[in-house]
Length: 382
Image (cartoon, rainbow, N blue to C red; front, side, top):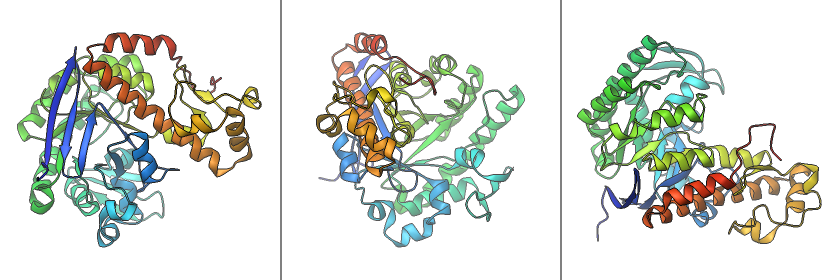
């Protein structure tokens, strides 16, 4: 039986929330889905089989980082990102736009694209819609992201409008570039990215332009960049509703567990974030009662698991005291085990959300989760 190129089926709804399956040639993606971030062709600290074991159906790779090292052409010569990394399931690639704006030096934006100086070796590059799509094709991406321009939500109204309008012109060029790679386009998908900061009118104009172009899925971009949860949720109260109901909706770069729960309630289907892996490397573990810093002295003789409610192999095998020792000693196993737990936590949360939606019990689940989960800012971890 031939698997579909891309097919999104919604199996149940609960309010604005949906659960379903994205069927692709490399496998099914259960939604709502969390995509662990494999920026440089690896989910840091984890082997592909362990990422699958945690429950992930798809991971994310990044155009900007991979174009600079080892290079998209080299990855293509080595068989593409799947063969190169040993990951057989679907891969979504970010277009590189966010990293160009946030990491690269001496950027110069024009209608053509973004010229920038590499943060690695100082070489100059031009990332345009066409080049971004070409890189993603060379990588063998299964879900390609359109190239867009991101500006802070604190930018002036004029700057926000101009960036949104340019992003829509780039979206059309991205779609044309994707379609020009016929063999790749026949087997894979492309998502457009809605922009417009926190402005409902700009978001609507962006959504209308993207729908006119036509994409397999739609991302809500430009959030989780410092505006705070209240402002983000305020935007999500209207932004997903402006996008097609029968296509997946992807909130880029989000986020903390309670961010995800609130976004699912508002109709989001897909997420990605570096937080579970980055936090694992710095000694932070996510638990049902909130994040903890395993470095803290009080865990030095704690024989309990990181999270008594967690089904992961780490919680089943090792104590907080042992993990405290590993992390305080700088042992690489500490970062690996903390990361594995965090990925399991996120993927288990997604499975619980899917089950709650299917049972028409999302409100009860979300309220119970929030009542137990204590969100802590950096420096306040207990």
